[in-house]
Image (cartoon, rainbow, N blue to C red; front, side):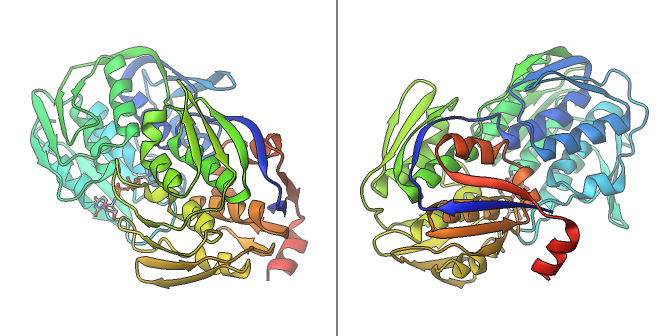
Amino acid sequence: MVKYVINGGKPLYGSVTISGAKNAVLGIIPAALLVEGVCRIENVPRISDVSLWLDILTYLGAKVRFVNPTTLEIDSTSLRRVDPDYDMMRRMRASYYLIGALLGRYGTARVAMPGGCDLGDRPIDQHIKGFQVLGAKIDVRNGVVNASLPMGLRAGHVYFDKVSVGATINVMLAAVRAPGLTVLENAAKEPHIVDVANFLNSMGADVRGAGTDVIKIRGVSKLRGGTYSIIPDQIEAGTFIAAVTATGGDITINNVIPKHLDCITAKFKEMGVTILDKDDAIRVIRDKPIIRTNVKTLPYPGFPTDMQPQITAVLCLANGTSVVTESIWDNRFRYVDELRRMGAQIQVDGKTAVIDAVTQLTGAPVCACDLRAGAALVIAGLAAKGHTEITGVHHIERGYENLVEKLQMLGAEISVLNVPDAEAVFRVG
Ligand code: UD1
């Protein structure tokens, strides 16, 4: 078992470089299955969810290789099989993108219901609704989604009942090969939606309007290979903003698109943090007390749910009571029990958390229950007085590249500890 060990209370100084966006690359790798030719994808983050995707593609017969540490080549010209392994699929939420990609390329998909972080109910009814409009017949049996196209793929008009990142990308993947004009209304607008659309367009697709709530897709008969570079990860950048806000200090965050961060930086500015935009970097200075605030998560361009745990950890150290409302997921406050072990004063009622600030958090043994919860515990540990040990870090490594090394470069006392399994069971149990 692996743990992160933190000796907290040190302010952060220096500079850090952000990796490619997790939620963009997790849509773009399966999109490469639509392409007959070699896709060269740059700025790929080396996170465990990417490794899992590459295992899935290799299992299907695609040729995948890193030509340098962050550039990936995928050649899906000829696949051996189209029935991905059930257990691999269950380990990742984004595995549902195989339905759209395989329907678009082969007209059939047989895919396990997806896994990923446990944030509450995670239905895929909007994905299914979109595929049905494009002519698919779908049934879910024994944990497997079976999709086919009895009359072939056709363009259509999809009005999503709910704004969904996954449904927007998934239906877009199938629609790029559907003859005619497909219109997606009430589409999600996140930067990673635009990134997947830009990737598809650079491989020969015709997708317009991504980044607005109406996306128009004119189907093409074939996608060809090409080169594409993934956008920087807005949530990773936001996590470093939260970290330096919690500890105090002055850091420069390189390789960001400041506009994509507005929905996050606006809130931290309200909290008294100074944030200076440069072309592809921001400087974040926290040299004054943290001002309390209220936060409500919303689809983009609202405050992202994937930053909710991190900002909650920071608000534990503000100058008064804050209220955080989660409006995307039903069950995204499970990490609060762990923050309480560190002295946080947080009451949760359904989808609302009331945070009474404390003057100091104290180090404790804690466990990450999901990816962003893990990030929140790292932030709390960096700010806390004393020693924190975080278990469950495999969740963190699903979505953050070299988090420990990057924090060490900023002066944090954080290290990775490999604990023999027997000792781990004894200590945790
Ligand atoms: C993606 C992100 C995740 C982020 C979330 C919201 C990936 C791999 N994951 O997840 O990190 O937290 O966006 O920004 O990109 N819903 C339905 N029916 C559906 C689909 C979704 O009711 O068919 C609901 C969900 O239960 C949730 C809301 O819509 O309440 C948003 O979900 P969605 O945007 O689809 O999240 P994901 O794409 O799974």
